[in-house]
Length: 364
Ligand SMILES: O=C(O)CCC(=O)C(=O)O
Ligand SMILES: [Fe+2]
Image (tube, rainbow, N blue to C red; front, side, top):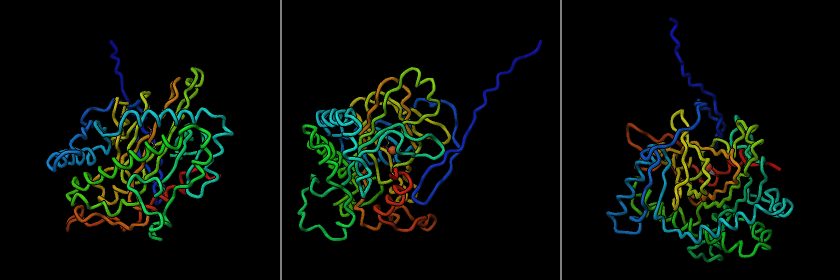
């Protein structure tokens, strides 16, 4: 009698990723993503960062482990109130549901520094995947709105040269009641949390807790709303490899990501895609390329992407945190040794981001 053998073959494909210094390639599985485990993407309780030094160190050691292993983790008890998040969420939806001409009032074409609105299909995160189906609104750091108040007449000229926020974003949305207030309240809360977290990251890297304070006075602090339109059953049928946002790594030190309850975020672990599903009352945090570089690759900036092949619209609200764009930073002293010399030259976070933005962002 003939025996039947089932051969389960994994197939792989080549993925092109953009980096500041040009494309890199990864071989990845084409198998459907599997669920992540609680070890791979742990939920870290941030309550301890508001406690004593021992508590802060405990959180730091959990963050260190997650940053070295997957580069992605959830945080709960993060201190950002549900009201603040929900008001921003509602305003984001108010913005995206406007007619396209109204959204174009803040078109990215008006921007010198990649602020504003870009429509579905305008960005193309990975050249080896489809264009991105998401539409997006972004705004960047402005000292005037910093929760840590600034004397606007005393901003050092070298800092001023690297300020990337632009007022047209708020002018062109002024017709939406409380839009600016609600959005900036969320952005400020994210910035305040990030400044606390960067101290915990310093502990995690065996540095003094205030080590990064000096380079986060006028930090990279990019707020973004991503809207992934839902699809009809016919569209889903034909969607194939249509990405919501193609495979990429984030640019700066770390990202706080709020995602709605739809799901769709995938993270690359080795050659395998993992689903990182929404968990109520959490943010996802992931490491960005600049911090990976500064840690001599100890902390990992992990490739991720989004699919939204479903009838529901999906919304996410990432906040990208980095160092003052004018500060030149090299590999951290605790991440080098005689056996492990610095692999990278110093660069400013601002120049680093600019190199990547020029390749990724839509050119009008
Ligand atoms: O929408 C998401 O869940 C992820 C967004 C993201 O990765 C990004 O904007 O860089
Ligand atoms: Fe991202």
